[in-house]
Image (cartoon, rainbow, N blue to C red; front, side, top):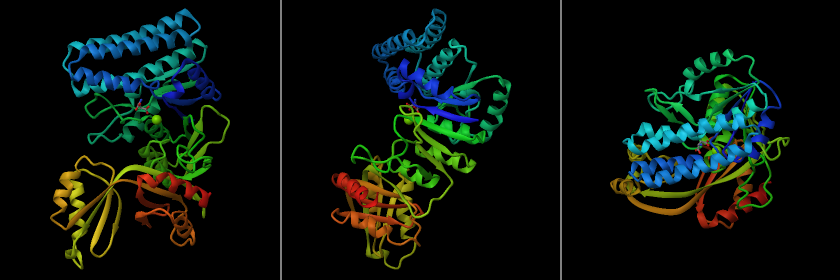
Length: 436
Ligand code: ASP
Ligand code: MG
């Protein structure tokens, strides 16, 4: 059994929906996880926002726009009146629910229910399409097995205990269709795994069931060895270790949700990234294998701020680093990179929400200087310290770029640089030229 996840653009038009069905119906017995049709979740967030501000007129306008789009989609997707009508009735019930909210006070629970509707509709539409085609498609409600614990983390045990028996009930199904993104919280209310969370849903399900493979289908030919928006002729990377993929996903490669890799990694279920536009291309496989002495890819993360704290009091003093880190912890601001010297520390953050308060506190410990508009460039591959020459090659590529920080040795797979945002494009290009 495999889990196949398709994102919003892959189900964004009737034509794409049909193509995607062809892809996943090629084999039977798999679980398909779907996102909402592209743009839908954004519209639902907008509706919830307007309702929160009691602007029911604007909310109704967005609901109506969505309704029109879905009506057109339904007209084009189905070939029989029966299934058009059935689906339209279902979609109408969702829109009646949305309209009915104009008169009730908004709560967080209702807001979550609103944003969940996109996946509920898309999975219903696809299941109905397959049923119309005479296929044995079984719709599973993710709300029956996807659950968050009290601290908002997915409850893997609950998932494992609940999804297995549900699947067994439908042993004659050719395919199971379910929603990505949505879940119930510890109180049983509708909740979600955060924006972009469908990848995470797919990986959680694949890991819970110890599936043969988790496939994440997008519109790009796997993970590329550099950012195609800034570098011409990037190449897809055929294989990545889970750790390498996690670094890349976190440091900028938008193709995969950063947190989703962990469950697959622990369950040792490979994740394959595939392209709906070119279904037979090999894509990228992410697994626990380590391919020695290769540099795999380069990625960049924008909007980074560097904070330097210098103090002669730090010299030979213990506990200085702890004090500084505690300030970041207190303001729930996570640190990406850190470099130290005997009299100073520089840390980088990507969330400036509490920057003023953080700086104010840090001034207790030394002189504070800020560099903003920075970016982290990270090179990922077999970078174990015993290997020679890689660091040199990488640094040579960056010989004309002013480097603010270097971080190496934190793990076996990564070397990162902090540079000015304005130098990002030429740094990425120079790295591609020297390394690939
Ligand atoms: N529909 C959700 C979003 O747009 C989840 C997803 O697509 O992964 O964020
Ligand atoms: Mg996505």
